[in-house]
Image (cartoon, rainbow, N blue to C red):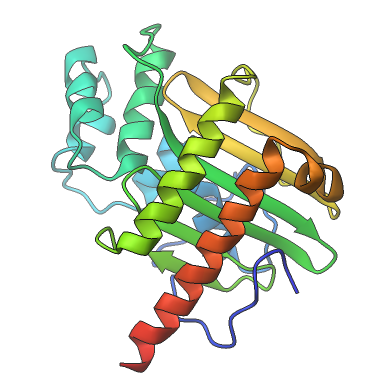
Length: 235
């Protein structure tokens, strides 16, 4: 069993519709399509998003995939709260790569990875209420329901606890590391000014007075998403 209870049947399935990009930063799962979904969680590979998007490109992809994107256009994407949070993260990353610091520090995504003997459990929660969960077996849960009050409350609590953590650390200035090994936990924070992360042995992080409560909420969120997805499937 993983950090989050394993669901008996896969409530929502997401598989690759195009060939996986071979140069992924990390490949923790046996299935190539699942590895693509995993790497998409971090919003740090624009080419991977481009490979999954069918041209001709419309807004906001016409801006993101432009050969010479305009800073003002990128800011338009960043400020557009109607867009998927992951799209806004991509735009923020592009703008920073052009030497443009964000106007404000904002947490837009939280990813919890737990290295297990049989594989990797990964939960991603985004500012807009969307979430993804990949079980160590490679099964995937896609949560795009943004009107569920219970899920939104749990996500808000997760973000509130996460903000306490990022206020005590700084951004990582190197490329994203490969997935954690068995016995380790990594919490990645996708922030407007860069990628932050905390990593350590699972027991230590769960017992820590700062990271422990956040990991407990992450577990509660995932349990709820799984149960809610199963309920939707059986209606």
